[in-house]
Amino acid sequence: MTSLPPPFLDPAKDASPFDTAREASAVLADPYLFRIRDLVYRASGIFQPDNKFYILENRCAKRLEALGITSLFEYFRLLTTSSRRESEIRLLLNEITVGETSFFRNQPQLDAFRKTVIPQLVEAKGRLGNRRLTIWSAGCATGEEPYSLAMMLAEESQTTLRGWSWNIFAVDLNDQRLEQAREGVYGEYALRSVTPYYMQKYFRPRNGQHQVCDEIRSMVTFERLNILDDSRMVFLKGQDAIFCCNVLIYFGGEPKRRVIQHFHNNVNLGGYLFLGHSESLFGINNDFRLLHFPGCVAYRKISRKPSPTSVI
Ligand SMILES: C[S@@+](CC[C@H](N)C(=O)[O-])C[C@H]1O[C@@H](n2cnc3c(N)ncnc32)[C@H](O)[C@@H]1O
Image (cartoon, rainbow, N blue to C red; front, side):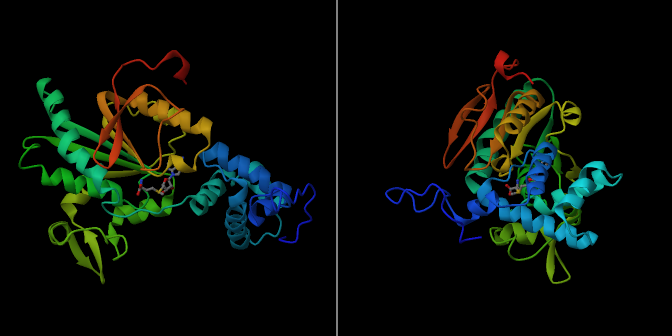
């Protein structure tokens, strides 16, 4: 594959018409792999660029091996026409999604949430006599993000949040990660940024690892949800803050726009949206106001109606 003949090679410019040998390998890939890529995109919003094609190939190879089939043509048929297609797409998405995460992964963001956002929400909602916060972690992977949020809220329970209740709704597409999240058992790597204070207060030893204590686990509801599923996303109104970090980075433009529009529809007026630190709404959505905090940004819903161009 690396010895691909360079058909339009201009030695004065690039050494190869492809950015990398991996991109070149996409050109030679099995045509059914392209169809599977489209299917994954439509099902999840996740787009595999040409230079990541080898990842899709490896993930499909795992499913082929598990199923005892030998061709991508056969696998594509299974994904599209068999009675097992829905469950097989789910299994393939379990292989494809990237689950990198850790506790307190983005400390500046969590500080902004704790020091500025919680007091603002408390002030605004308190005036209306509504003493409940609703937080949504979209693309929660194995649960580290929503549990970190729960621990911060618990820390505020004797001060800013005295007399308040809250719930954290944490969703993901990946069944295996959700199972792990509900169990709440973690090794050293996931816990590398947890301070001794939090460790001692919110974790219990469990078979050589550490389990999130029951009080914190009871604050988080985990559910499988595809954030691209319009029919379910319309029922998630009333969010005070949405965290969707390091998820949309893998999405194509159109699904990203659709998901952001759902977030805008679902977050309360004055509510917040947090994205991962390499993600932004630039060129995607103008309906949120960009806010700068030390070391991070957030988005706030400032008008009830989305602009006419951004309605789904
Ligand atoms: C890299 S992890 C991010 C975890 C956490 N938010 C963080 O920032 O540490 C991305 C997660 O998004 C999930 N995901 C990807 N596409 C999704 C979709 N369409 N609906 C729901 N979850 C999705 C993946 O399964 C994966 O667990």
